[in-house]
Amino acid sequence: MFDSRLDQLDKAVKLRKESADILLDYWSRYSIFTTFEFWCIVALFFVPLIVIILKIDKSKIFLIGFYGYSVHMLSFYFNLFGVNRGLWSYPFQLIPTMPSFAFDSSFVPVTFMLVYQWTLHHKKNYYITALIVAVLLAFIIDPIFVKMGLIRLYGHTNYAYRLVIYVIPLLMAKLITNVFLWLQKKFGDSPPLL
Image (cartoon, rainbow, N blue to C red; front, side):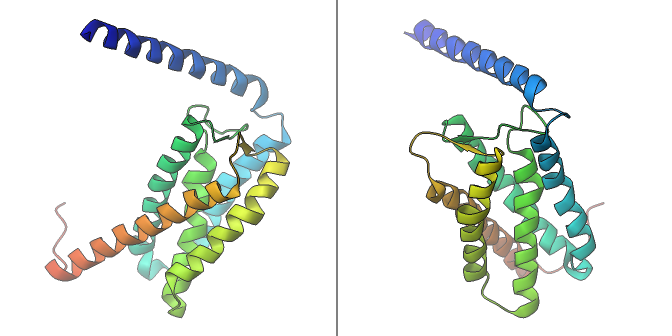
């Protein structure tokens, strides 16, 4: 029984490697330097990073940066789940082994870092504002990206699925940030360990 289980695991690993090789071949043939879509992905990565460097509130840089990093990590996990389950894919990629890198590392986190910063400055409800922006991304921006060929949906996947991968990470990132703010308040500002 143990051997058959390991055989099945070995088969799955072999199939994953073959799949990764096929995707790498696809990337090297169709997803680099010579396509308009590739340069759109480059812009989706670099432009938001430039914007956040210019617009981030320097007095709250660690708070907003921590929140953004949380959005980045959580979005990556949720997007990876969707890609691995065959719900959607990203035909054009900066890094072939990280299919949603430009979206999860820059576009989505920076968008919501700006939302978070705006709600802090204007004392607005984060949850309502973030939900509105998530709906705009899922039902307006994502369909544009689909038409441009930057995102591809499969099977019965619709934009409500995409809304979920925006909303859940936003709620979790806010919760994580709030927990760390509470811990900081409870234990005070202690000197850095460096």
